[in-house]
Amino acid sequence: MSDTEHDPSRRHALSCMLWAGSAVIWTVSGGIPRGRMLNQAEAATAAGFNFAQISDSHIGFARDPNMDTPGTLQAAIDQVRASPLRPAMILHTGDVSHLSKPSEFDTAEKINASGGLDVHYVPGEHDVLVEEGRGFIERFQKGVKQGAPGGAFYSFDQGGVHFVGLNNVGNLAAGGMGRLGEAQLVWLEKDLKGLAASQPIVVFAHIPLWTVYAEWGWGTEDAVRALTALKRFGSVTVLNGHIHQVMQKVEGHVAFHTARSTAFPQPAPGTAPSAGPMKVEPGRLRAMLGTASVSMVPTGTTLAIIDTPLGA
Amino acid sequence: MRMRPVTRRGAAGLLVSLFAPAAFAVEEKTAMVSIDNFTFKPARLTVDKGTRVNFVNHDDIPHLVVGSTSPPLFKSEVLDTHDSFARVFDKSGSYPYFCSLHPHMQGVIVVK
Ligand SMILES: [Cu+2]
Image 1 (cartoon, each protein chain N blue to C red):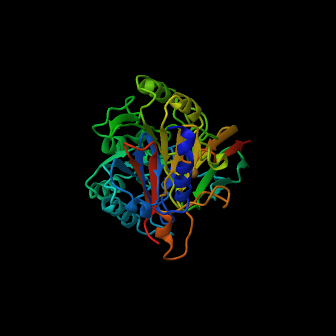
Image 2 (image 1 turned 60 degrees about the horizontal axis):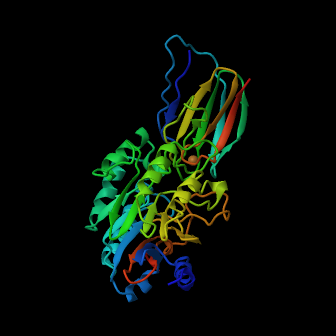
Image 3 (image 1 turned 120 degrees about the vertical axis):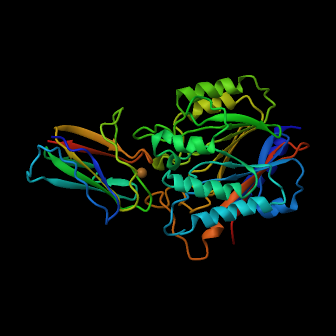
């Protein structure tokens, strides 16, 4: 089957995600993750390997528009747990906490555990505000074989997919954007080296690995080298958070996708003076929060991503 | 007689001044940098030697104030809404700084 045969359907699926709500469920079918909205997910069969993505729970934030970030995170976890796709695990793409406080980590850990699924974490910049993120790493990446000591990046294999969790929030430099750094890039190149080009890859990291909007720092300055190392693979899916809204783009065999926050929405690039929390009409908040799910269908050729809002 | 940076927590927070014991009451000049909409205002502030500069966060998202050199000359704790950070600039020169949470936010203190 040719790529051209399958790209249109993928593009269609991805465009649907743009106005969907809060959870993304990713379906890996034949190696390419595809996203769908939750109602589409419900109609889909649960065959294949599925996992969920949640992001930017910002536990500790309690201001307009969301005084109850634990409540909306719990709603996201409940949504994942209730998904007919039966996700095998959850990826959390960072900003678990708002201020890196142990009490915030406690709350998040308890709520996330209530889903009964393994959760794989990468840090957001809000998680590494103290001691180079040691508190976050010790709690949320325990048992993980770090790519470098304290680096907060690692890889693992599950469901026929090679997962790579990257850290692009450490040692940010003045005037820059997200950054992976030399040590991590060297590790990534080594990590990918032995893999067959047919191996489906899912990369997850907090800040988008493509430049969404440089003026707000929405991008990763040294991502090009990482993407170069990923170029030879037939199916690469890059899952990010940070921007608190769904955005997607397909470039060659690489599908980029950002998930909604479970805490508060942020404005579309350039539509507001700054990227702060977007105020919403009362009762409209949950329509702008959500989760994603990804499914891998062994007989298909694409991964499906479904973004699902927490509410109408 | 260098004063260490202090962080003030919230509007009702205590201002803890850590003067070296030898320092005594000299009328201190103060200046302010306001953090609004992910920008330092003014982005370029010129002050006299010995001025105490207060950085106050008015955003509903936290920020930091970190010297741009590596390693940084100064670094605040995370400043949540209404938190502030103060530093006395007692040597002439140019002190660029940024927010390590949002590195596109940059400013400079010029000390005459
Ligand atoms: Cu900032």
